Length: 259
Length: 359
Image (cartoon, rainbow over all chains, first blue to last red; front, side, top):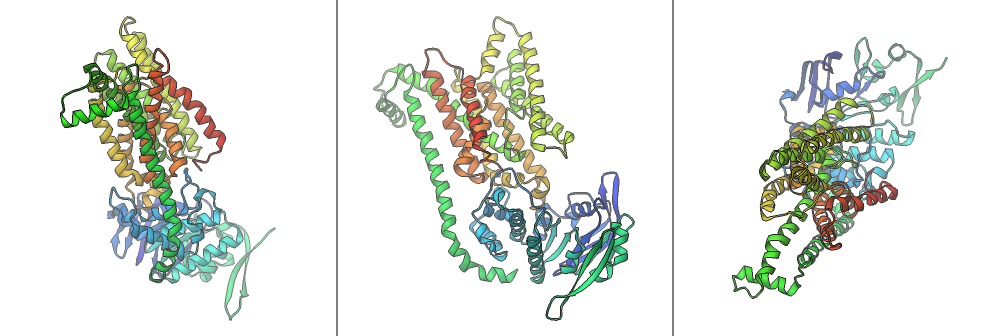
């Protein structure tokens, strides 16, 4: 599976936010979108998911133009994990995950036993079966995020689009979600995610798209996320350090310097 | 993803019992609701100024089915088939229609605080029907005009609330715009009343607005059948999708739902149900708001069971309240007044209970 953005322009009606953006996401890759607030990360997401009209360029999935796709075909190929939120009704976690099967159901059907089994598998894959009978609106933000990922897995897409999967989570939950995302990529899922933390890109991204008002840069995290580029994009001073984490592995991290 | 699929079955089999127990509980609640409706139906048939004992009742129905010679007085048969049965059927259909559409509206607008009344559908349909009565339309005419204006009101409410507040509290904005539309159409209805002839049209419209099933006839039952079964069929067929819609436009689309089409079909059906009810029974408030909440307490929020549960419970509720309306006092109590008297404190109770049927 390969999703290609070729010279994509996106924005709302008469306002174009991003111009000429091109990058690809393939299976097992994690592409992390970084950039200051209001630079157009969400707009780009909404365009990739087909919520907003493409203003220019092309989006191709394995060479096919996605604009011609039905919602069902879209959903079977690209899964969306929104920021954790609360729906108006107290659904059980299992009901929420089973809703991931919508794209496989006939117009008037509800999930069959097979669909429910797939939902169950999604819970097991994320090791959250203990949540299955809990009320979705009553569990913690970190748990809700996991449930939304499980729902997207039940959708069996080949690519996941994740909108700030670590937002509103405590430090431990952020890392658990990132570890899970990494595991999904290892199993073959292509992932596009946004984040506000360059560290998250260092931890798990295979490529980074750093968006700024002037333009964008795309490449491996080590090349794109430099002290200069971060200073330019976010307007703050940062130092990038490298730490040994055992077994000869090193991780980069970004340390802001406060004036 | 392959690996998870392979190791899954053993684990999920172990988890299944708890799940089955949950399903059984819901199944039990549904059976209880169906039994309640059946029992109420039987009791309602016997109740009334002209009491018909259960034995005679069964005898008549059995006799009718087998085509046996009548061994019962003709008056009993006339009371039963021309007066009581139509009224009971109307009560059940109106209750089911208002509750089913209320539950659907709550999901479609992802807002547990809406109902046919709050969205303005009732006020719109009420105005349409008053207009039709003023112009001497027949029953079909009343139904169609009330549907047209009910739909106009709903579309007005959701269109306005959309353009007003994308970033504001959506639940509140929808309820407030609904109130605006509601009062607008109530004002239109007042204009109609002002114009109406005080000797015949005005009392007709006023009594009808109070809400009641006093004048239910076989013709009314027939007129209600088509919109009732049509609307409910669509709600039943699309009921699982309402779950998805309650997560919001974008998520529903990302999950593979053609939201525009599904939502339009649901709004049309729910509004058809509401306006057809109002055309035959006048304004009967609160049913569409409290019954879905009560049903949610019984069977949970999943629309797969919530819609049928709301339908059954709504039919029982209105049938029971109508029984009270026609038997407790020497003169009839208008049904709409009773549902408000029961509904308002009950909804307050739900509010005090603490949001257990919504987030």
